[in-house]
Length: 215
Image (tube, rainbow, N blue to C red; front, side, top):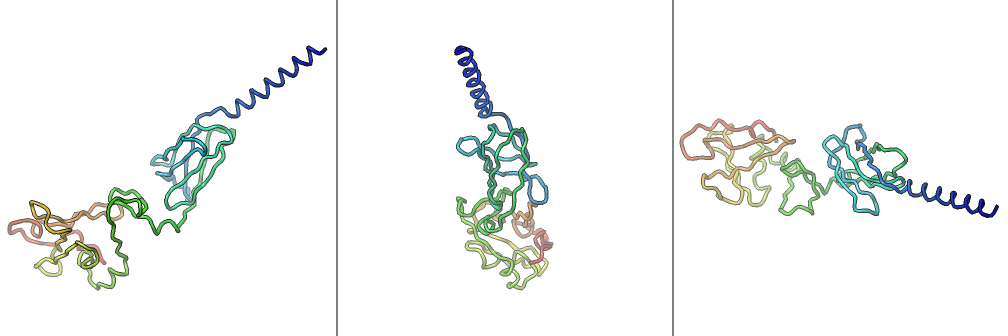
């Protein structure tokens, strides 16, 4: 009778060990991160707390991660409030991020379309607010920037109000004389230069795309 009792206790102990081991075994968890409107959000950083496992969501907000039941996954990104999600028994997660406008005051969108905190940039950044452009009282966006950014010189063309304005950054540092910057507006690349205003020769100056943007 005593041997039967010992066998029963051993079986029970093995069962508990098996359950505990199963609970702690890692598996592949897939999911998607969405914003408040239900759109997939890319570039969200996720990390399994207490481990070195981490990653970033893809362009459509999907992700995969190796985690165990009861693991806590932290989702963070600039412009969103941090969100901790506990892994359950399933193999999929649906995460909703809420915007945090308090962080947006210290964020800049680089020319590559990447949001980064201003203090983490390795180069100088100058911010010009829309109210300052309106105060310039000029319909040309390039001319409205005159005197607003250190090291930037803007000269209006000699062809009148419709002629292109030449923008020089930190002097003439190009063999061709063209130091015009590249404008990125809502992800659209705009080249402000014209052949008549930026190069040698007698080409006519009919303005450029920047003239179509109202300050």
